[in-house]
Image: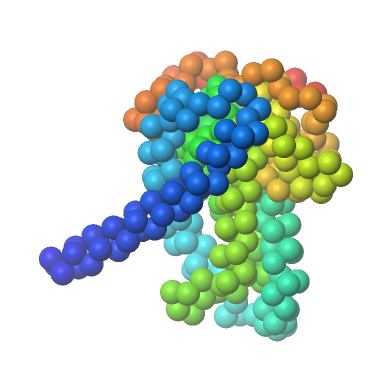
Length: 286
């Protein structure tokens, strides 16, 4: 028993150390970037920085375990059945073909999961935590209730595995294409939340930019637009894109959201019906 607990402690410590190294890398990338190309006056120690830092560790450790368990059984069963040899054929596709397809179908799944978080009042109670930030920077990407994070990740990973684009591991080794797709997606999410005035020119019709996602965080009805994380043309296809060519005037939500970690965790499950407004009642302009 003690040996098992010790092994679990070592594994947890290794995960925390890995996240600390990633955090150092993110700081080395985005802090200088935001200082040099700041859209708004750059503040490293802005409001709720410590809370968002805590969410960084919580939302990287906890949701990943839940998502892995929830997907592994179903996908392994489907791949063992391998109807008509479909999964075997798709699994044999070259890496350079699978990777962009994985990014696309993942972002398409994320689009619908993310849209549900905005349009279903019960789910918005959780997602409003993420939108409560009144100052945008790279670390705002981590401010999210674990339930919110799990739903978005499952929405993105499920189509990759069900379509056979991601191979199911027979050991503890993750599919390299899945790993790379996740790294690209995570880094891009930090970028589009960052406090930078970058524009991507003609590429903005193909790839999301900070301006595209900053409008998603604005403090008016346009927050219910721009649901895709990487490919903005997904929003254009479904009529939810909003890109006027100038930056939003402010960020945040009207709801009263706690400024503490414990409060943000417990607020969404507060049974009071008046705690948050119904996003479906807001008129979305697209």
